[in-house]
Image 1: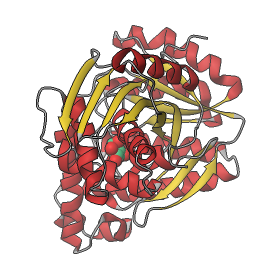
Image 2: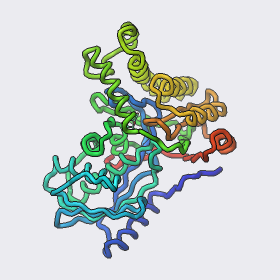
Image 3: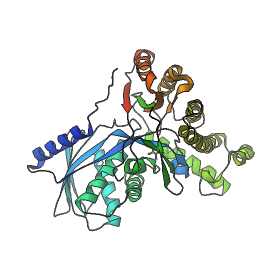
Image 4: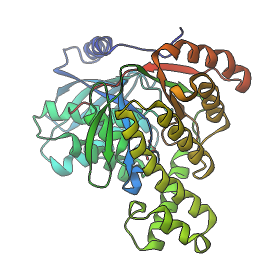
Length: 390
Ligand code: GLA
């Protein structure tokens, strides 16, 4: 069985950042913090519509070694980004147009300082193994790892929900992506062995154990996502336009019956976007019920319907992701579920696979994907892990 990801175990990442920190700063790090990436089992493009999502934190994440400083300087060594070093002062945080990754640090700390203006600077070393641009939330895991780091360095009382809101604020107000709350919240508050049903309307959540007989497989199509932020922000605007048409705060307040009754009055693209969101909320609830009783036939049907809706109504799939879904579905049939996951426009598919079929799925993907699409797939056999603030 080939696992093509660079799977560095949590403890190995910890040793790596500690060593790198000593090389960079010539003294030992005070602390090491980690936050996971995530995979979403079902419920995509529902979070910013006050809807339901069902993500799990995964055993790939971002790890930071740090020490406090007495001045306002933040000095960051990013091991995976060409080993770049970037420095800025907390008293003068500006957008850095040359070094994109630095804006996640800048935006997160600017948002954090609205709650905790007293924090001082830090020396940081960052490394991570969440594949970037794959829809597995490398940026949210970076933001949450950073917030955990400052929480520990400066003994802040920050909790997981507030950390998630600060991470989201960094994306919305500083980086320029109008994302929802799902990625940051699961990275902060995920539970080992479980997915999380999150109600994005009031941020209440429930841990949902993933049955032991199911493996969590992620296949990266390795199509680099293009135009992500602009297309993503456009989808959000389209959803908001339909909510506005109905005079409600979000699509969560609308039923499919109401939507259908207004079909003639709503522009067809907007109608399809809204139909995806409203039907996807129902699918999340149905998946939750099915997971609790290990009803794989329902999970299979509902995940397929989610994929088709993201492909046809929300227009965020790609031919490569569609191809992967078909390949995996042929092996697992109604014994498991598979769909594209995350924001779309490239990235990964997620599959819940009975453990006895994992090898078959991996072999099928390895034999067929490159032949069909000319790209090598990457396959990650994941486990659901604990969030940084849990
Ligand atoms: C991205 C965003 C999330 C969510 C997903 C789609 O990952 O960051 O907030 O909207 O896309 O479900």
